[in-house]
Image 1 (spheres, rainbow, N blue to C red):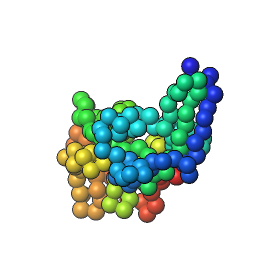
Image 2 (cartoon, rainbow, N blue to C red):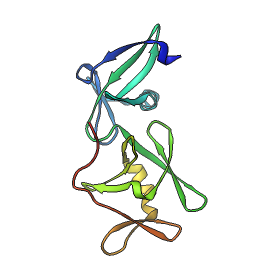
Image 3 (cartoon, rainbow, N blue to C red):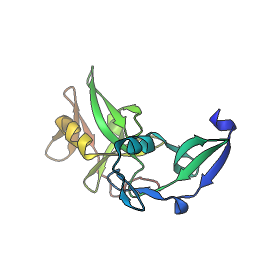
Image 4 (cartoon, helix red, strand yellow):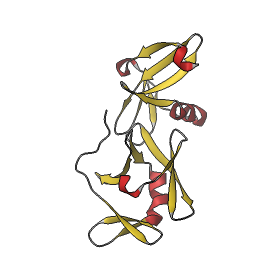
Length: 162
């Protein structure tokens, strides 16, 4: 089991990679290009008391590399429309998240979902997809789920938590 392995901790100051405000990984030689490496990095993101890190078992130990991110460590990358006016968000980690309308907010012209554990930013692709469910009621941006409008509040400060 992973929890029984000795941990090797690499602090974010020593990490050789970082995540920009658009969810793009960068290293010493520029942005990551290889889709399989990007998917592996995204799928390896975990969070503990010390913050977000990439976690992978190595021979005889568990490696945790904490990393710097500009805005959020997690991103909504796709939207799946379900029955009964429900949306499921696909996260950059490939984990699904059922959208609770009260979790949405905007900040600095970006859309976020706030869960008890994470602040998650919508990628450009996900913004395009969710735009079919967004309406402006004249005063506020709203999420339209099955004809019911849910106001999306605007915040002055984003809750990225780094």
